[in-house]
Amino acid sequence: MIPDKKPALPWWGRISSRAAGHLSIEADLSLDTRLLFLAIGNANTAGHAYFPEGVERCLSRVDRATGELLPYGERHMRTVIRKLIDAGALSIHSTRRCLVVTDGLWSTGAAKPPRQACPEHGHQKRWTAWGWSDADDEARLRNGVLSAV
Image (cartoon, rainbow, N blue to C red; front, side, top):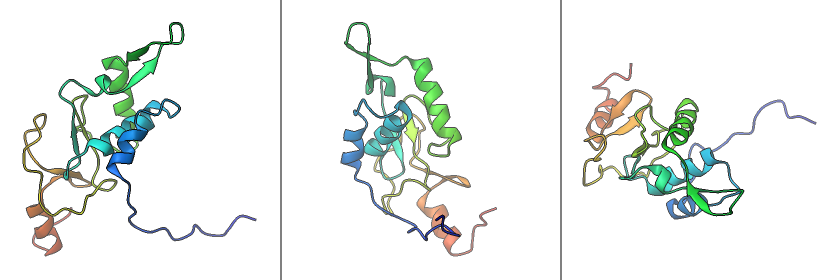
């Protein structure tokens, strides 16, 4: 029997950054799932996961002919990043060097921004449904000083 309506789900749950990082190396998972776990496992309080040499250096694939581990190519990684952007898991500003997890998916609950600006984007802002946002914008939005539209 199919229920008439979906069960009420909680707004928030928790996921361990460390566990997400470990899951990113699990070869049985799809590459897009591994990439998302890699981003969550390395994201700072603003959702930026910075990889100076590119994410393809962090994830490997098994060569079926030789059995050796090889990195993914940049082009292939860009395709997977685009898939996660289209799904709403990553910001449109995500690159091979910085995956920005969307605010609707990732929040540490920390009010303070990270100590350093993201080297790729040059700021400490989070990506929200309204675009880049920082703690000051969010406080003004909560107090009705800033419009969400």
